[in-house]
Length: 165
Image (tube, rainbow, N blue to C red):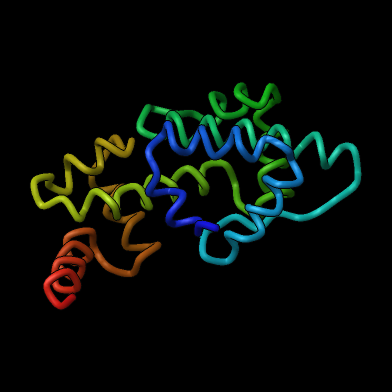
């Protein structure tokens, strides 16, 4: 059993392999529930055929986000991966995960950034670009909103934790 944060720390190939292992939507849904509340995912169980189809489409869109998070992604790109309109994509994410696709993407990028902040050879600007932010100011603002501190302070705290261990 791995946590959502551990899942985010996996390489793209490892995430895709895990997705393929959890291809059964019931297993995927169970894993999504295991990850809450540590991550942003809060899946809802349902036997409604429409919900099952939504779950499968969200599954595909999540893999797409996890595979392409570093690219310049639009909501249309995510919706296209799930073969639905932008409005349907937003509704599916809200219904199945209680977040918008954009919120999920930002959360995922920030989680990836926390892993990269442990690497002292990369500066904050480089990390923001690596995880898909076009603007370092936007990255820093989003990071502060989620973690309550700047990426630089987060790095310093991580360094202190490493030295203290």
